[in-house]
Length: 248
Image 1 (cartoon, rainbow, N blue to C red):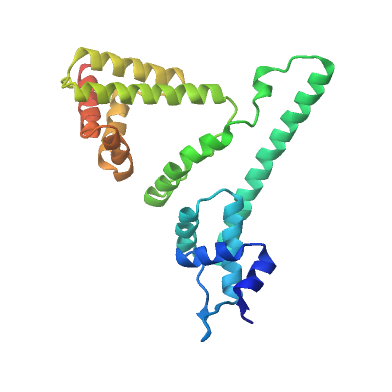
Image 2 (spheres, one colour; image 1 turned 180 degrees about the vertical axis):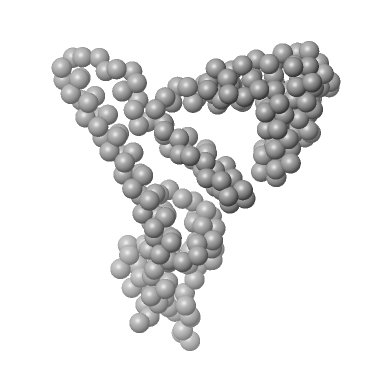
């Protein structure tokens, strides 16, 4: 059975204007267009629209939805993936509801809430969105699935992110200023950075850092991230790391 745009809109709640737009960008194409110019949709198009709406519920952009659906091997695999994502969202919402409930009860009692409990479940989405592209890239290109992080101490995670940003920005500024990779100031900031990583359970030494820097230099994704900060930064980081390892 085939359906016109108006009927699809009535069945799904998606506006006619939106359906037209989905067709325009190639996200949801009708299976055929009638002689009178009507867009017609069949069962496969309805199934695809359902999957699009699931991803929209998960806050995927239209661009990401299109890319994701193009890479899905089958409808069942897509649905299973969406189910997992929705379960994860439900779990996060349950945590947030518990936090709100506890906050309300303590306010009623005139008591102060434990600071860690106060922010339990908050800001998790920001971290997951920031890491999603990176983790998917590692999985797709190297076959390694990075273990899911348990967001127990967001303060420590934010501190680590700030340190990484500070370190890279320092190197980018040094490169623009023409500092040699052997500059003692750079060797000192790298030493401090490695100490920070070890104080946060990273267990890394100078030789391992060189391997990491080499990976950043040779891998397209990570090299692009550094080169967007400053052209030549990926090689600069690797050279600084090598010199530091020779001295340590």
